[in-house]
Length: 235
Image 1: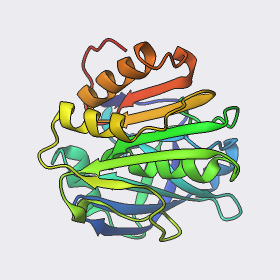
Image 2: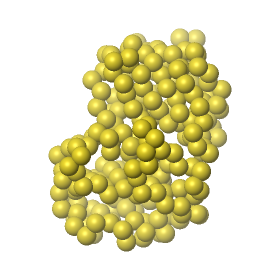
Image 3: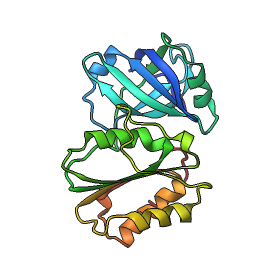
Image 4: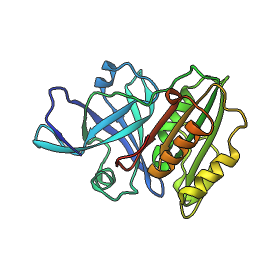
């Protein structure tokens, strides 16, 4: 992904960058520009992997807010390095005190408290986003969680150091195996349910279609998004 120079570019400072799991770094950014947003759980940030004022076409990556502290304008992100691409190289070199540049925050996969029941399903690449959705839901909600990974060392706790989600080691990650396991554990009744399904592209598609066609979840209640690969699909 490459970004051309834009009229609105925000900036901040790296407060912390540390490895918290086998393939994940915890990035913390302070920026007074965050005060310009009306934050909602589920926001994402398009971060430039360099200085867009010096590079005509500066590459960037989209990351989910893991937490936002509005008094001091501090945001947390969990940056995964599974791809070993440019974003993975960038996060491993970033140091506290480094400047950082980004586009105005926004979001589409936002928290929605209008249902009684919730499914939060994904892999490690979507874990921080699902954690933020989870913390933004009212405590009265019934929440089913399922996070899958190939190894235990890929999991990391939420920002408050808790492990509120049910996590599963599935190695290798095979679509049919993961989907069959999820289906076997789903609540019997899915009335008045919103499903957030993120992560592995094929698993997202198969599970989305199962909930739509076999469980009759309304399409507006299916919030589905492959997090680490973009290709045509049938969502």
